Image (tube, rainbow, N blue to C red; front, top):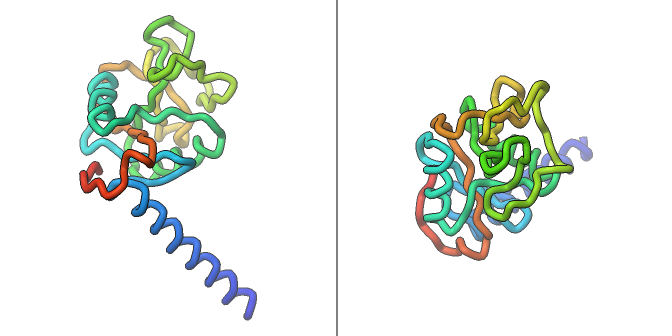
Length: 162
């Protein structure tokens, strides 16, 4: 019995701390992970428009650097329940050469493509039908999207974003 109580207490403390970290470093409704804050756009947008909206918040479309970050963002996308969630990866500049749009760095070696992907479309997203593995879709297809900002840009910022 003491073990169950201890476990429940540990989970409760963890939840309180995570909530405090999110609210301390990130805009309302955004989530903290690994030095960045992540938030969803309010409504679906094409990839270029989504990129521009993220820039308004001194950010970019989310770019994944670790498998832990990939899992964290997948879980955010699962919570949103959108069919597609745009990320910052593209091969629009050179077909088959996938890179992060903000810096031109390759997505590889860290990739989480769904089977059969990528398949000749140009913008990266999490796709609900493949349990949020990576998918490529047309860049002009309006989808929900995840922005990423450094947490240092967020203190006491009251912009609501999703």
